Length: 534
Image 1 (cartoon, rainbow, N blue to C red):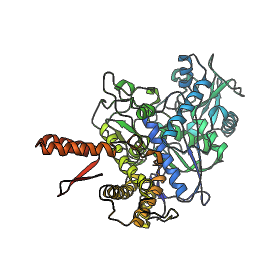
Image 2 (image 1 turned 90 degrees about the vertical axis):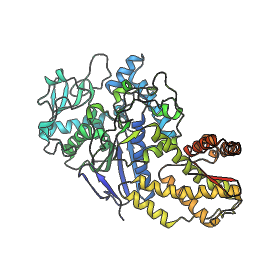
Image 3 (image 1 turned 180 degrees about the vertical axis):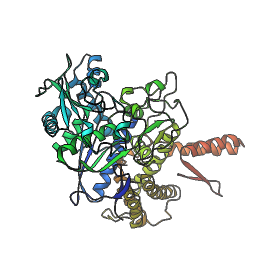
């Protein structure tokens, strides 16, 4: 079965055929570095990390490039607020980006081009567009003439006459620019410098680039004229990716990307994430437990259609959410109880529990489900580390369960269907978890050690494709999450004591508490109780 993926440009799934057999050129739009990343960013970059990892597992050599936008009004505003500089703010939040994404086990890109390091390519591309009649200078600014590009709107499906004035970019002030543009739909390629702002010299005067031109220039500098996959959040379909296509294809006469991929959004209890709604959650808050489950709620929004986009007015660049509402520590509602820190692998699992093109809702229940799911998978991953010696495994063995691998590949080949792929992992992990408990309580396993090793090797391999990993030192509740074996045994004894005392309500309460933590109890005829993680 060939790998098929959904192409936002064609609005259908099609077999993946790279420009060069065995090699993939992949570009992802990165963050604007003025604040901490949030759970919307987490979803976006976990998704594209998954795609990259799977392509590598399928045998492709993947060159993955992700940019940083390091000049922007938001960065300049943050610099003024903190009595700092644009460069210092950008460097700080690039470091913070890596601190967060490294914890989430997101592989680092092969290259991270920056807007401020790409000025020669940016100015060269603007000159080419100007010479070909697609751009014009006006009072120190340079604008792209949208009506000159006949294919404008082919990605977003928007018609030019339906597009609102001022939707062209984040650097524009509508009233002033309306006097400079030939048409309200035109967007800025170069902006003349304002007093006190950083600038670069150019033939149009001192200034800085517009947002959209950055990625067009960086793609060409890093890859050439055409790439295989261009990806980002669905909020980037219009105007950013639409404008990238217009710029690059007008200059080269060739397709910018053969496949356009977009992830859907994260909502919080059915609402967009916003400080004003007290539901804003950064990655750091989530991992450190500085967030609250006491979040405002509303009926969930309808799911995204294929390749569709939510209200772009409320969304920002570099992932999935409005960057205007960003800020560290914005998730906790005043006076509410702080929630437990979420394990990085549980965050990855939360993302994979929904298809990347489906909207996913961040709720206390969803995170609890992801935690329990990670407990199950982690217990399976730890099986070989705990029992290899006891089961006399052959450490040189490298085989895998062919049926499980084929099922996993079939799911992932179907436009990266991670929920179906996770089902394969859960089946393997649950079997290993069950055998682990039997081994602990009965001193033997029901399944042969050879088959258990085969299943464990398969689980470790396939989980690794999704970036789900557990370290040898993680054989503890702190790393895996949930209750430790000792805590479970204590609760089982307390339940037994309650039942002897005929306090059945307390016994039921303890059983339900264990169940809520993913622990299944099996009462034996001889009065003993065995358990396993669900």
